[in-house]
Image (cartoon, rainbow, N blue to C red; front, side):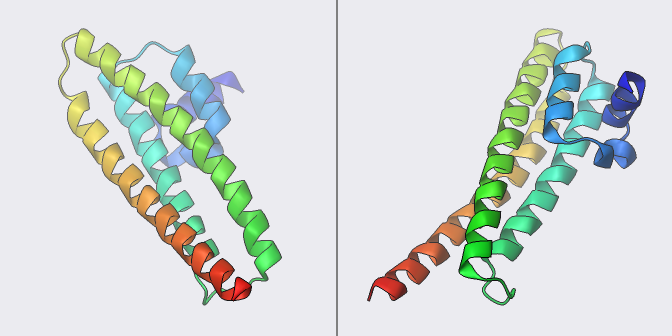
Length: 140
């Protein structure tokens, strides 16, 4: 299983097999080089894009879902988002290790990740605004 996990971390096509907890263990466990870092970034970006899509659908009023279902799903997605953000922190530590070893090639990858995170934050903020509008409509 450990070999499968490491292979998945280094192969973006197989990263669907990994959740954030597995990815975090792999990031901590293996010595970093640019090739593995690039694969990890690709995997995390893929998962963050999927998370962004899930969040968009959860907050989209056109998606048929009761308020209770929407709240439960939003809570679960919030926990998942926090877990992926902690994985991002590990990737940033990896980038620092690479820079300390003299590689500046990790910087563009971090910038790509920042853009994905910015998009994710934007979706969460939009969802919170929608939630506030719904709550204020109900109170009035």
